[in-house]
Length: 139
Image (tube, rainbow, N blue to C red; front, side, top):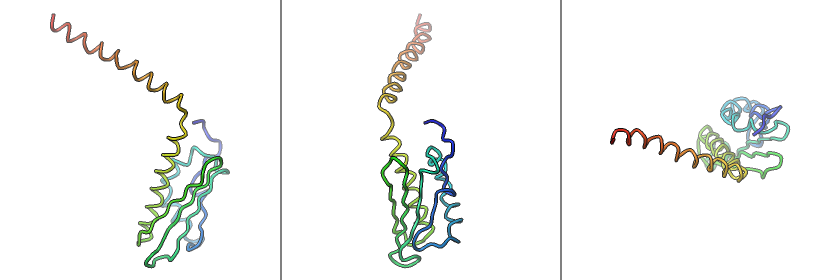
């Protein structure tokens, strides 16, 4: 992936929706900071994150994290964990997994074949090199 001039970060792209206040934004951004490495491959001006919660701190609470990246399908992750911190961790981890899955699906097939071809060529050379000392010992 080519270097991005203005990489996306949680602190820059996150907005808080229903159930959260602007005062909650900073501690949520800190909790989601581990997503920065995954978001860095996308332009900040083309990436948005929104976190919201229904029935905050009550039975049946539901946390939702939505991610919009230009040129890709919207990703929505949800958690029904009863504890707010656990629910936020749950949606964060699910988003990271889904971003990784999306990257893998969009990887050009040609690059995969080139890597596989390179790997296959390297194996016989290693096997041959390993056989030579054994042949020398047997002689």
